[in-house]
Image (cartoon, rainbow, N blue to C red; front, side, top):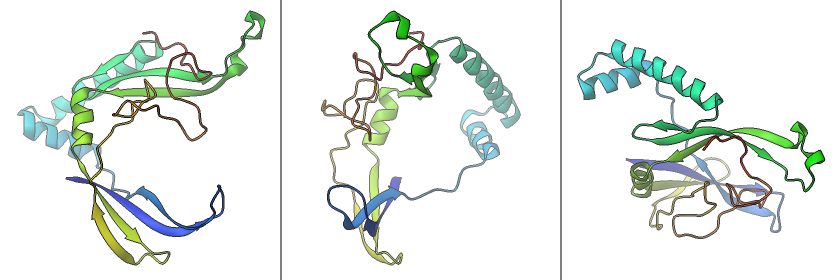
Length: 182
């Protein structure tokens, strides 16, 4: 299996070097229907699809309830998830108000096995011109580094940043997660 990416030539008008550039985006996949997920899980486990769906629905309820109570929830085979917020930091107690919260977040932390799966999955890039004609195809030869938004690093330990130049995750920045219950 491979992750498919499109690199299409288009005019970029913003930034330091505007002009014609190849801009990457995921090659959108057709969403898999829920019914197919339960059917495949039933095939792999020997448990009926109906029982798997009932268990999945019950687990979903528990996850939603515990997450809204501030818990970090294990998602077996995948990692953990929790709710959090992005907010501004203030120096004075009297300045702490709900309007400091800029966005509510769902924070997913993948487990080592899932990160390894991503690291070991090749990436296939299809290069297109501005009219959608295929110019070439390439397969990844990159190091497979994985972004770690919890610690603000990539797989090689370098500091990572978001699009606005602020580091994701904890560590005393103005973007600390609050109310994560850990």
